[in-house]
Length: 381
Image (tube, rainbow, N blue to C red):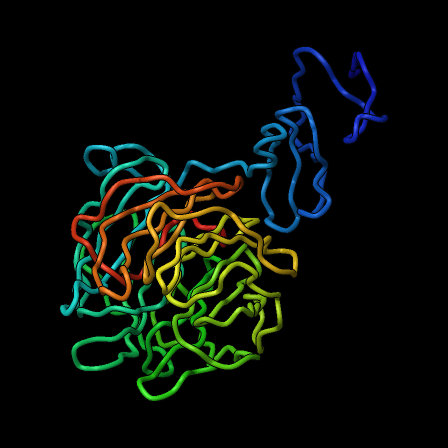
């Protein structure tokens, strides 16, 4: 016979329902279900430590107080170390590949541990030198892919991949359906999506997809609903990818498990510019910097259609930076100062669930612009 001794009764909003106090043990071989709801129905001003399941992100989250709010529970089984210095710590691994040191192209791949702070380290090399590859994070918990780009011999349709947990050179994956640069890239860990871009003579409105666990050529997904453009970037949760292009203030989205054309998401209200970086958690997407250069950071709630809001500022105004993230932190890597076309080695970080200005994370080994970034812990996973 089971016995429950109850000190107080209250529901999620503290107005009724059970609260079990003291040392409590659940010994059932089955399961218990915490409160369930989408992002929009999150309660506010809960006791710190309150637990719920978010149906938008499909993840558990807990309340860290009124200042920080709801934060998803991070899994640790895919945390990586293996570096030296600050990168010895465990956490999500970010990798970034290619880029430019004007007027040269590079093929280097570097990595860093997002949950720590410090400089990047060597990972390996790509099979070709190039910049302006897919912008975003086309990756799973085990693989990162890098697609297309502008090279010394023109635009490519090539796709390469690395195994994030190891270090070493990239391997051939397959080809996109077209040659191009500046595709907006995103993923849900199963599919990688490549939208838009520039083929050397015109802007593309094509959207491709790949299955990240299987090598092979990309397949047609659909088309952008708006005007095709370059300098694309994207943010994701586990179901939705939101894309931005060029200096356009419009955002478009797709549901990654389907195929078809994009739909309107909303407007970027904060100083829209091209050549920006992005990062995401399971609930928020952030866009940082841009041509000018500017230092603005804007954010959206990925599951909710609508316009962006101001987040804060980068530590240094710049364009053509790379960006990726862990479940809670975004990093913005390198970039270029305009109009001087001077590359920088700055790495900034922000905590995605808050707002405020970015702070210094560390430095890239060499100053570079337009590298392709990915991680094994971004918001789409």
